[in-house]
Image 1: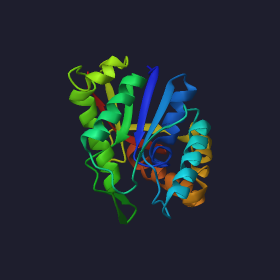
Image 2: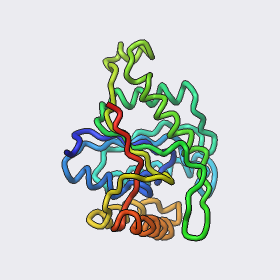
Image 3: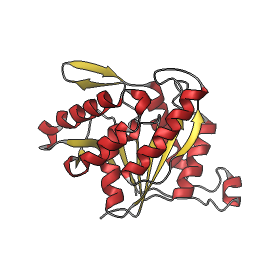
Image 4: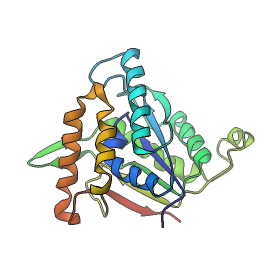
Length: 228
């Protein structure tokens, strides 16, 4: 069954497109309302400063449109400095209670490295912090009114997310076939002009092909958790 509401949380602009772009595009095409949250400003992605952050924000907005998703929400934390603290958890609870998703997609917080062919690719600390904060926001904070009562006063009442898919994981157990939505994913990745988008799209293709042996087809892989 296709969920009616989906929330995807990424650490940086382009993370969601890279790891889950075809999946998000497919969900949107099937009629789901897909919302995106980006935790950091992306200001260290090949440069530094407010100018790059503004450019990456615009790129992320164009990429979300290419996938058929709603305009992203930007939390604005400093790139490379994300920590799982109460401020981030509260911001994520606000987004969860606003979106009221049935399905949430997030970084696997246990990923310190992944395999890329013969090489290992080290994980980003922002990815782990974002993933860990999502888990801590989901339970117990988003579902209990005793956390952040000021949000309830704004109409953002407790919400239980029933299913969680973790991407960028070394232990995927759920695979989404990417071929049908590969053009949308590529278009979204190419929106990130500041990030060497041709190489980004190539690496995403290699990532999908790398899962073929396990999935039987080019895929995006997730660790799928049924929560309730």
